[in-house]
Image 1 (cartoon, one colour):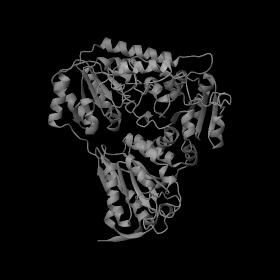
Image 2 (cartoon, one colour; image 1 turned 180 degrees about the vertical axis):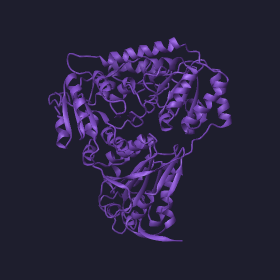
Image 3 (spheres, rainbow, N blue to C red; image 1 turned 30 degrees about the horizontal axis):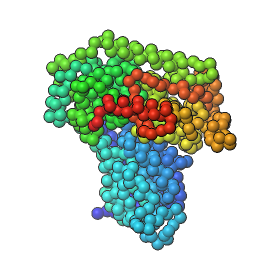
Image 4 (cartoon, rainbow, N blue to C red; image 1 turned 60 degrees about the vertical axis):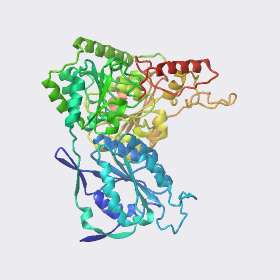
Length: 622
């Protein structure tokens, strides 16, 4: 057997450089590059291998470890999980900074490869700088913290262990069901140790992603269930987009007159103006989708995890005869809500079911006028939100309407946290698949700016807009510098409403007078954060990093800024002052369960608890 002598880090990069995926007969390289920040735990191992070009992988210098993983996650999501970046860090705090982002990727089922540095496998210099010591178990290090948020975890304590570790890593990363964060911990001494690796380990490896078809039994049961239902509704999830099944979903919906509601991950599966697209569904849903869900006798989930937001905390479906059919590659997701399982790829399942339902001439009992009226009513509500003017300043929904009308249909928006996800889910009008990128599995504050860079790396010819609140921006915006360094233009549209206003609104909606969520000075007399608002110049902050910035206080200024950012060649930021509390609220049939205090001195909190308890009686138990 022919061998080649390489350090473990050199071998790792050479292996990654020869990984490919194949789907529908199309083959593409799986690992695009490595994003990293060097420290004493990886600079002389992975750093040396990258410097000496042990592979053709592109290296991008991150500025914050969590941020760079968000960039990698957004890239993989936009590439339908068929291309990835790996992320390398030092030991200790550098590694642990990636844990939050690992959870974000895993919850959203997005592949990212994390390569944290680790303490010395020999233990000879122990305790080294940044080492976590557990007196009850000396095998534990900081990288063990990744175990709960990783779909696969390994530690390469000897250079020859790399081979089984990486084969298993690729198995999980390329599996549509099992994918998520994969963590392979790399002790800093082992990274630099040499081994005679078999040349066969570095041969081109193609991981075939197969489209799973419906089993004969599952297909027959699905047809029988659908055929006896009169008022079905489809919930389109992220699996529709990952499967590239938008065309099949549209044809299926049209053929049988079945309306569609979209989850956050599934939004943009269908054009917003398609007659059977009833908009968002669930806690942040449209009145059209939620009314249909309430009365539906069959809910067909396609590629959705059926989270509490999509199901209005299991209160959305009130028909006593309602049944559930879940089409999903994951049996865990397919079984939710006590559903009938249809474990299959979305594109394949929709084609097969359409063919069989055509044969029996199935049709829902909805009338065209009934669905048209619901859609028209919701369209009027969105128009009203977009036209919401306020003499005191800019409303958030009005600003969103202007942005929606000006940016291009092929451009992509990204958001993740605060009140923007709810408003965007309800109001944003998407024309093309993948033009709406929402991280709402973890709703991780700080994902937006870093994620925008990931989308830009995936789609370098398109404009990308990160819609972010001031709270999220303050948490993490460091990859703005990376976008400038890499000459990958991103556009940040910052909604400055003086604090964590989403949670402030939520808090007050449950009886509170508001506490600890606005950016105010401390009032020394009250010893509380109830003073005046803290003035923050976000435009100046971004400009200091090299971005082109705009400060907006009127609609005309916003229009001018949006037109100008299209012409800029460098990353931009538009600082928009919006009025707190001007997001969408109180949409019909929307609800989200919270843990409201059962005992409180506040009569308003007591009333909120009673309201929650009465609504809970309508919720499904499983």
